[in-house]
Image 1 (cartoon, rainbow, N blue to C red):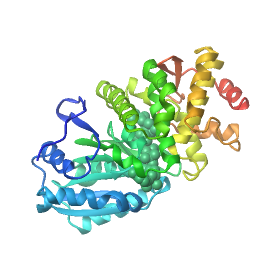
Image 2 (tube, rainbow, N blue to C red; image 1 turned 180 degrees about the horizontal axis):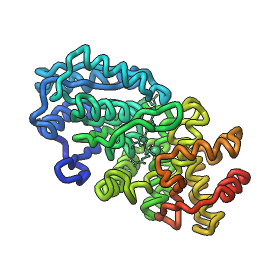
Image 3 (tube, protein in one colour; image 1 turned 90 degrees about the vertical axis):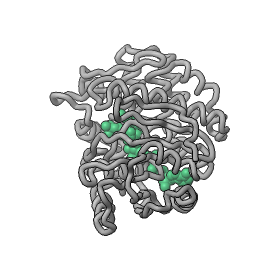
Image 4 (cartoon, helix red, strand yellow; image 1 turned 90 degrees about the horizontal axis):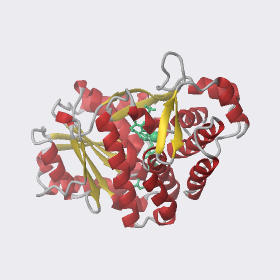
Length: 370
Ligand SMILES: NC(=O)c1ccc[n+]([C@@H]2O[C@H](COP(=O)([O-])OP(=O)(O)OC[C@H]3O[C@@H](n4cnc5c(N)ncnc54)[C@H](O)[C@@H]3O)[C@@H](O)[C@H]2O)c1
Ligand SMILES: O=C(O)C(=O)C[C@@H](O)[C@H](O)[C@H](O)COP(=O)(O)O
Ligand SMILES: [Zn+2]
């Protein structure tokens, strides 16, 4: 049994890990990856997923593991309810109860099979079960394949704010099977494109231009286009994470659009807006703020807005958030330092920077123009 060809690597010294991108990886390949990444793992595996994803892929994954002799392991399934509002402490507690009930040991392995909600939850479970056990990410949404499965940010939400309770805990491997995107609802595909566009805006003007030319192919799910977009996105994220794992500096750039986006998600109780949709509208707000402050030219702000619109994503936030509420919600952002909000704003094609000098007047002027 051979592991598939490794596509990328996240270089973090002893905690470095491979990312595999390709088709038909979900079956026996995962067993090979597991044995290569965790040769000393124990016999217990917990696959955390939800019913929607499980219906499509849980059997293939479980059969693949068993066919390759990982059958010695006891494979447990922990299915969480589907939806952002279940990325909560309550569901985290239920999964922990299950691990206690099945007597999971410290040498168990957790596998996250699903989108970013499952991945963030499974990662947080892995980070905290008996003070930390290894886990493998098998992302099945575009958003999770290009972003949440890489980099080790794990978390659950609090009603007061997004991802407020969490830990940095890197996976031992990431297996991205692009075939899983075939069953992904169109709205979710578009939400994933928001984070793909983010990389073009903040890090790579050539990739941004490629996205302008190839958006229709991505929306049609052409495999070559998807594989390129996923690989380039993971490459950009892997480089940033390797340089600044714990977000003391440039990793904050990956938060482009998120100060506004997380506020939208919290204002709508994590129910009506998808994360990627909120980030899309948040990136347009960041571009307009950058234009208002003279950091970018009108043509660049327009290109960002047009690309987001062409991906079928929202370009304006909901209308019913008062200025006061915007300021309250944004004040909970994890990037706040010494009481000051920090924003990631584009500064030119493929470039962005962190700004901590944005006045409330500038913000309210922005909100007024939406
Ligand atoms: N940790 C990070 O670095 C990071 C980065 C970006 C986003 N996130 C988090 O990720 C979450 C959003 O993730 P998401 O957009 O993947 O949403 P999600 O996990 O809710 O998945 C979206 C929907 O698609 C379904 N689904 C998943 N895979 C499918 C498939 N292959 N076929 C059919 N249906 C499928 C899910 O059941 C769900 O209904 C948010 O909580 C966000 O905060 C984390
Ligand atoms: O990996 C990162 O770093 C990111 O910021 C990626 C974001 O897309 C992601 O939504 C992340 O979960 C946001 O992190 P947070 O620290 O603002 O909660
Ligand atoms: Zn995000």
